Length: 336
Ligand SMILES: [Zn+2]
Image 1 (cartoon, helix red, strand yellow):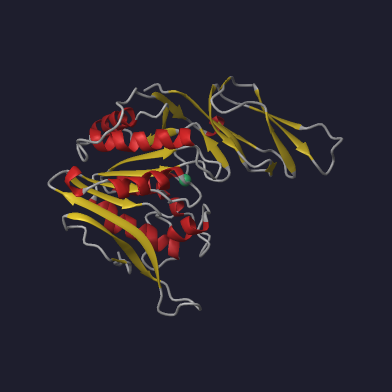
Image 2 (cartoon, protein in one colour):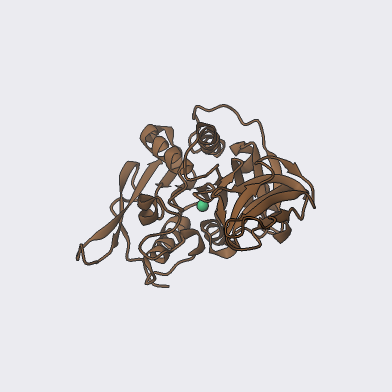
């Protein structure tokens, strides 16, 4: 596989706290010899595992970005046992634009792994993360939220790999240490093998994700869950042994199964009337939403129903909706 054309301004093997950029040569009309400066921070001290903390994989998900920016400023090298690599604006062009996807190539970083050294900008970034960062890590925590179009019950999430008993036990241990009110396990996560988490697993690292709220904004409640969770896992792993944080109260472990956990808009040109709220417990057959048609307002709304029992973990935010939009997804209590 080709080597990355991205070069870091920091040395991952050096002790101490280094801040700098991943320089991605990007020659365009406005800047012939220019580069994209993707911010990166490395804090290394003593011996211990390497943890990658990333956010801004989707640029319109802010809870993780705020959490990591605060932690970067706060942590001193002497607090760290091992190494923490921070990539707070992973898809930098998307993060600067406040968009899920990159304005340069419309690329969705979390559907671009393992990436391509000679691909479009988003695929080049994915390739760098896969070949240069994940290969250095034992743990990778990629902080997401619902972004502009979704709102989540603040949750940590992970994927279990069938047959990998030891690895799966560690994943469950970390979800419990993170201590979000709810955590969910997915066997077929959105993006499947194209996500940062999937690449981390292929590289032998333990991967954890979050879905911390969303709606294209930050709320104090979601931020508290995100900040406390990240601090608790760093403490739990012994990477920041003296981290000040409340102990975990555990988590309600959920699972997100197949297509029947998701509810979609059935027709074009509608206004979404949700008939349940986030966190509600619902039954299969229960009414989920009414889709009203502005172009024929006398028409009866189209009624959408849940196809599975569960808790409403995720809800669509924009009122306008088209066929194919996800309106809700459910989780149900985890049964191993
Ligand atoms: Zn995301």
